[in-house]
Amino acid sequence: MATPTDKPTDKSADPKSGDSRPAKAAQSHAGEVLQCERLDFTDLVPQNRPRAQSMAGFDDCYTDIVDYIIRCTHKIWDERDVGLIYTHYTHNCVLYGTMGTMYNREDVVRDTLQRLVSLPERRGMATQVVWSGNDVDGFYTSHLVTGSGRHSQNGHYGPATGRAFVSRTVADCMVFENKIYREWVVADQMAIIRQLGLDPQAYAEKLAKAKLSQGLTSLDIGENGLMMGQYPPSELPLDTSIAASDLERKTLEWLHAAYNRKMFGVLRDVYAPTVMYHGPLMKELYGITAVSHQMIGLIGAIPDAVFMPQHVCSVDCVEGGTKVAVRWVMEGHHLGFGGLESLGDPTGKRIQVMGMSHFHYKDGRIVDDWTVYDELSMLVQVKLAQLADRPAVSDIAL
Image (cartoon, rainbow, N blue to C red):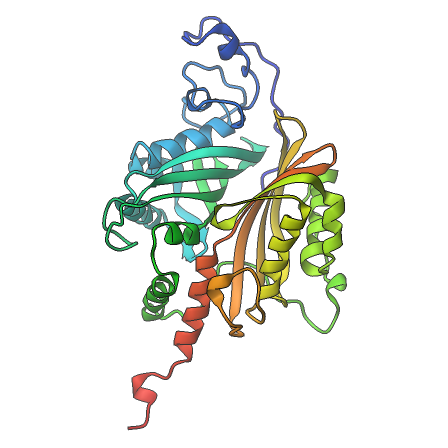
C-alpha cells in the first residue's frame, strides 16, 4: 500500500526549459507537486517543466503524480486517446464501481468507449487530487472530477435527450510505474439521470434486469461485513492503522462516532459554522445543520448499516489547511425512510454503498465537504433483490 513518504523538493525552475509562460507563472510551482485549486488547465499539464518528484518508470511527460493523474485522464476521456488505457492500466487491473467490478483491461476499454458514445460532449475538470506515496512503494491518488456536457447521442442512457448535465465523480487509483493496477470509481449517476429527465425507476429496473439475466442476484461492491453478535455500535472495532497522521486519525474517529454510534452532535465540533457541503445530486448546502440533515438522511434509510473506512490520505492545501480524502463502504438493509427519495417505502433489502469524501480542514475545522455516492446504485440493488424474489415461470404451478 502506498505511504505518504515522498515529499516535494524545493527546486527552482529551469531557465532553459523553454516554457513560454511568464517567469512568475513558470516558476511559481517549480519543485512543488501541483495542486488543482488555483491553476488553469494549461498549468496542470505543463510543457518543459522539470520534474518535481522522482517518477521512475513513468512516461517522460509526467512531472509529478498530480500531473500524471490529471493529464492521462484528460488524454483518455477528453482527447479520446482511449488506447492509452493499454499503457496506463495493467492487463489484470481491478476496477471497483458502484454497479459491479471489472477484472481486466479490456473491460475498462469497452466501458470507456460506451460512455463516450452516450456523452460525446462531456468534459471532466479536475477539482482536486489528494495523494500519498512515492515511486518506490507506489502512489495512491484520490481524484475528484466535475464533469459537464450534453446528452447528444443515443447510447446506454437511451435516445439522446439533448439535455445538459453536471455531475461529480471520484476515482481512487493505486499506481506503480505508469500503470494503474487497482481503481475505485464512484460516479453520481443518479444526478445525470435526473438532469436528463429520465425515469429513475424505469432505468434502474432495466439495469437490474440486465444483471439478473447475467445470473446475479446482488451487487457486491464493497469489502465490509455487518458486525457480529449483539454488541452496541460503540463496541465495533475502529481500525485507525490506515491513518498516517493525527488529522487522518481524528477524521476516522469522528466518522465512526457519527455513522456507527449515531452521535451526530460530534459534527458541531468538527465542522465550521460556515461549512459548504457539496453532495450527491449536485447539492450545494451551507452550515452544520444542513450537513447533519444529509448524513441522517442517508443513515435513516439504512439504519442498521455499518460504516467502514477503506483508505485515508491527506495533503497540505495551497488554500491553507489540509485536505483529507476517505474512501468508505456502508452495508446494511433498507429498513427506514431517509433522504434517498427514489427508494420509497422500506423494502428490507440489503444495500451496499461505496462512497468517497474529501474534507478541507482549516484552523482545525472542516470548511468544505465533498461527498459522492450513487443513489442509482442503491435503487438498482433494491430492484435486483425484488426481481430475484419473483418466482421463475418454471416454478409457477400451472
